[in-house]
Length: 441
Image 1 (tube, rainbow, N blue to C red):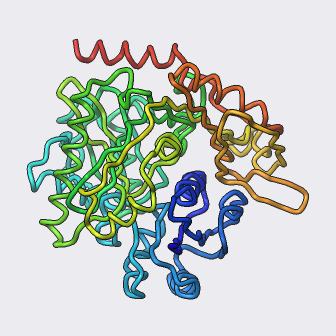
Image 2 (image 1 turned 90 degrees about the horizontal axis):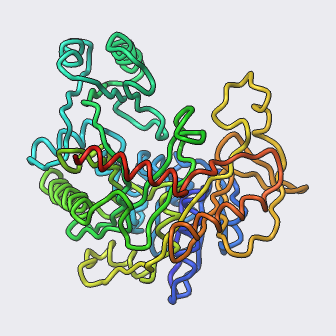
């Protein structure tokens, strides 16, 4: 029996906790969370509420409970060096060290790594630590994307045509970013369809999980501000309706080459999740960014389908023997829709903005899975916070049935809530297919 430490408190960590507990090894789960997720707590032998920057507290909790290995959910503890800290205490982790977590925490590190080792997938880009040369480079591109070099909670990317219209505005955004961050990255804007390819790696072997498409925009038809993700879907054939088999192969190949390059660059094996955000363009698959952990919501599309024992996967990642394990997923389609407060993503002066701290009630959901995200369990019930509340996941033999299961289950949550009813529906998916056909010519 293994004692497993899970760090994190969101819906992503809820589905990770479920995968750990499902193991045939009957592990004991110990969870360190910055706020109390009642679902994770119910699966745990012991829980500690603390701060992800308090590495001594995390170490003490791990040592006291004789933890065999840790699994890290969110990016903040990785950025804080929790893996390095646990390593010093003799506790291995599924998650990269602080230096290797730069794959996510430093977009310039990743762009430059691909460039140095001639790995395909980079758009035209430049990294600037001052405004010198920024205007010249922006003017050399048709349209641009600007982003800070650091963690932004998935909301720091500014895209021309979406978040701003002119190159003058692009310059102004670059100036603002450099006031708060050491570098700004300017990429060419790419036209295509995005997909998430979450891969697991022991630093030598890289294994892909089924590709997923996330929906960042707050409202129906991809309108409104960017969010942490309003929902996502995956298909039963472990592709996506607008993809070819070559697209998946290309994404996996880029990630394998990045894993190899990380070892060449640092002498250290990357042990954990390499989640690539890719876009399919007329010139093939390009890399938008990497995350050093599972996606939220994308983990909720993939981990429930996992047929291979998750604890076995964790052990082979730590031991560097992932090549000895066959990692399998059920051939099912999934649709995840996030239930959010009505005020989520709205200006503070909007009439619905106050809904973010309201009480909600969750009735019995027969067919769908519910994963608790940012909720607060109090004596008198369950309350929302300012962020996404509950991930609702439908799983079925095809996308249409999975979407219907998720949509039906939404009605089981009562309160001032909202969601995106169009995620996983035929019309939205068809638009993606038509868009990709046009791009491929």
